[in-house]
Amino acid sequence: MPPPVACDVLIVGGGHNGLACACYLAAAGLKVRVLERRGVVGGAAVTEEFHPGFRNSTASYTVSLLHPQVIRDLRLADHGLRIVERPLSNFLPLSDGDCLKVGPSLEQTRAEVARFSKADAEKLPAYYAMLERVAGVLREMTLETPPNVGGGVGDLIAALKTARRFKRLDMAARREVLDLFTKSAGDLLDAWFESAPIKAAFGFDAIVGNFASPYAPGTAYVLLHHVFGEVNGRRGAWGHAIGGMGAITQAMAAEARARGVHIDLNAEVVNVCVDSRGAQGVQLRDGRVIEARCVAANVNPRLLYTRLIDAPALDGEFLRRMRAWKCDSATFRMNVALRELPDFTCLPGAVPAAHHQSGIIIAPTLAYMEQAYFDARTYGCSRAPVVEMLIPSTVDESLAPEGAHVASLFCQHFSYDLPSGLTWDAIREDAADHVIDTVTRFAPNFRDAVIARRILSPLDLEREFGLTRGDIFHGALTLDQLWTARPVLGHADYRSPVKRLYLCGSGTHPGGGVSGLPGRNAAREIVRDFRRGLYKGR
Image (cartoon, rainbow, N blue to C red; front, top):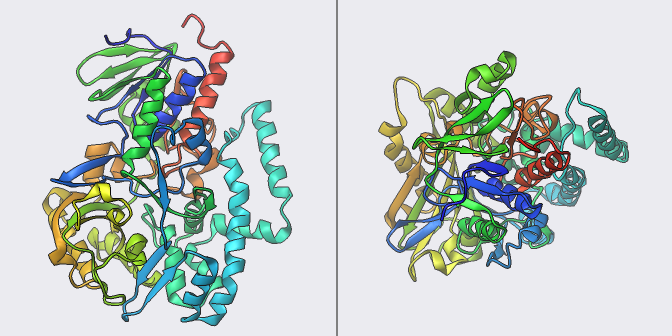
């Protein structure tokens, strides 16, 4: 039997943050219902078969930012989640036939880097220590609700707590914080290193899901954002969830159901119902209206405020800002079925090896990344795109038939907006061919190894997963859209300007990536409001 219509909290969107939020709310004794527009729970973190016998993570594709506290609190390991670390962090084939391998240990990386620059190899420990000093401070802040500018006493106390945290840093560390929040990744890396390969290896993180040149101010923060994480206790590491990213959200859904959460699939929300009391529920595409004491939206803020809420319910200045909320990942995503592993010119052989199990980055220099960005701004698509390839079947036999493999191709820069009347429906196959050609330049057997492929252009990501303009982070991670300004000054505490309406997705602090923290933090604020008696008697 379906549950009664009314509940305490309705969650719009069954992605990982929506599920995390639901679990924490249910643990506090609230009655929760999750509404997911697709026929499978998990949002963009799902595992699906895209060719007979071949399964892969459809959109989101790798693990690091998933917070260990979320893993523990939601008992994800008890529900079968197992994460394995990559044997190498990254592998970069270079244009001259050489390559760079990063990891697994500092000494091994230093030995690799020393082939290009002994000075850079000497600087590596200090560089890693600098990142960890800053990340260590910010890692604590990811678990906290940002103070609202102009808020009350509680917000003032939270701001003072943050100020004291930074005050404890010595002057050198404060300067490092300033560098990482304001500088470009390119300028930061140029000041540290002289060799192009190591700058490319580190600089790639600055443009992941970020439509910008690595020399754009603020990209150093995006680089930092991607080193917050850990795998099985090892900080800065990246890994693979056995069974794909869907293993994470299936484990979350299992825990949610165990806590009494009801999950509706094929339940697309088209309107948040608002009256003088605030949000009172939602309307689904099939016409049903579901009531609740409050609503939590696990969607892009721009989508929520410009498409799901009637404009008269919002202040005009706020609505103007949400219409201008920056959403541009310029991401092109593809999964391919392979009859054999890529045979790289720089490391010959199609027998599984450590470099096949790493993050394979096709972007040999910062200049290459910058030109890819310029191309996309001019032509819509990069003529030499940035490609990160993962081959998860090398560590997870469940994804492909014996002897065959699946590969994830995560590609930058492919603009949502195309020039000269071009459309993504018209050019998506050509763009996919171009990506495959790019990889084939470094692994000559790659094109012939491809059996099948599934393509997700920026427009496809929007259509299929509700990612506005294809933005994987629910909004750019720029300084004007972070912390107390995410999504806007005055509403950084997961509460919206509409009473009884909350945000619990990546468009809130601490931002994008599969971390579960926006959902966790939002749940804490919702529970506080219930305990304050705000929703008694509706």
